[in-house]
Length: 285
Image (spheres, rainbow, N blue to C red):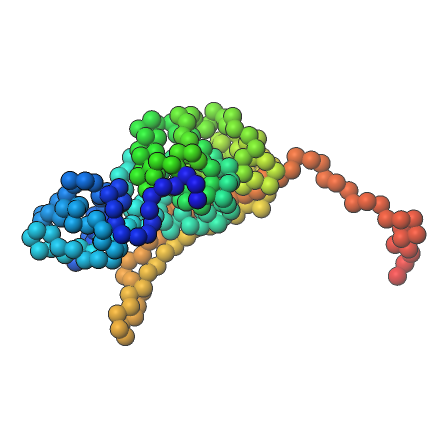
């Protein structure tokens, strides 16, 4: 797809993001550079030693520590990337893509870009993303993270404006509006004007009271088919015949609320039936 330039396959090369995983499953993210080195207390791994290797190869540091080397998945990158703000976690990112029905070429407004986790997920799905962010440091961090994962070419589909969505949304004819900010109900009236009929709005809210106020705003601003869900993620321990749920799970993170923008047109009455059908309808059965 145009707009992305990072390799996802083939031997590792300079410029690639790589994930090094040690024997204790600790994960380290780095970008391969000429003359670069990966340092930990367990020794040094020169980047030159990694170039040309296939993913899934195990390498050793100068002190004998072993590392499994892979390109990071999107979820792995999001969990290890540098952050300016709290990120939306992978367990919510995938449902957001489905609930908001993100498709290639979709014109998406994201309010509150934070550290860029949602942005890079939208871009991976092929959307054209316009981000509103009130803090310049957050905007800079998000852009840096997005480019680090997707490559420089992604800026063709990614724009961030330093703008407060509470004050309005100048953009129009949008396909989707995604709200990740403390009071999304304040932005719902602006989203109603910015979306075309049938467009979707989705709000990410940590508390149920935020979700309730958002649902009330949606009801009074021309939206329908609203739903609110919470996603829980429980892993399982499977080792031979020892099978049980993990003792710890990723439970509540946020509520996801979505709704469709309805038409402003007045209800259309069905056409009148022909005279003979109308007369027959009046006769008793």
